[in-house]
Length: 204
Image 1 (cartoon, one colour):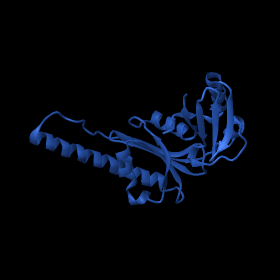
Image 2 (image 1 turned 30 degrees about the horizontal axis):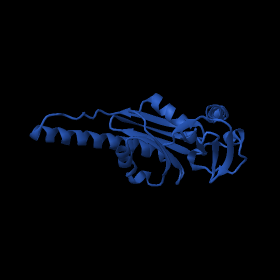
Image 3 (image 1 turned 90 degrees about the vertical axis):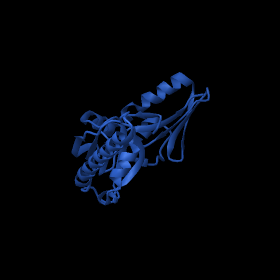
Image 4 (image 1 turned 135 degrees about the vertical axis):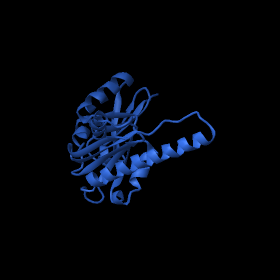
């Protein structure tokens, strides 16, 4: 995940603040990103969302204006405690579903009790992932083949859901969002994060 996610409307201010902290900053465009190198040796590399490449002027305003969402894309957040899935058109959520499933926590019990507990916990997790996959297939199945999907939550849980054959036609982006158990507010913030400028910062 990038070190900083900056909404496009705030990106110009972010660059000014970076310069205020680190001194005079030279801007350039390199390998599809807007880069900055400050007089104190600190640097940043700003990337457009959804893996888009930037080839415009080395100016914050021009870079921010280049931020755009795909016509069709999706969001998939999964943890053992729940899931959130959404289908979007540019910045508008067309359909979404948030669900919670109870998966027991770990136990300190030993022996056969621990084994039974572990089996029950694994079964609950598998049922939760199956429910998430069913809703993801229903909602994201409306997307054109090859559409981008932003993912987050728990790596293993997301991988389990994406193994569903009905989701193979979609493409996960390089952005990973380490969200807590998905709730409606978590999903809404994740959508904003997916649309943000992705900035890697190296402080001198």
